Image 1 (cartoon, rainbow, N blue to C red):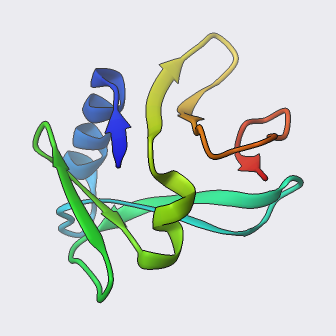
Image 2 (cartoon, helix red, strand yellow):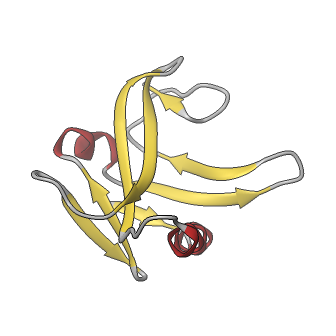
Image 3 (cartoon, rainbow, N blue to C red):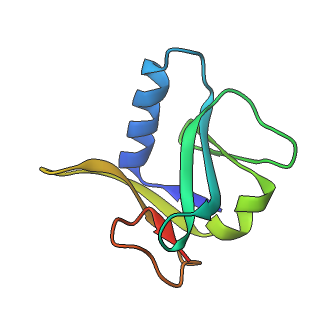
Length: 106
């Protein structure tokens, strides 16, 4: 369903290790908003919810709610580090267009 690059796995594991409250994995969601129609939301998660798909990849659990699953199937998530900014980058084959920042799509 979703692929994490090695860099993304390392970033999530670092975030989990530094979390103030215990967390087991990462939740990836899509909701209406952003400049292109939909936006990605990510956050640390401690448990699954009804309707979630739970994916274990390289020791990282990904939680995806039922409404977001169709939007993220086949997506690859990377973590890039640059001089001006660092963060997660989404390569989503379901997106027909995206905004210039890459955080919003349609």
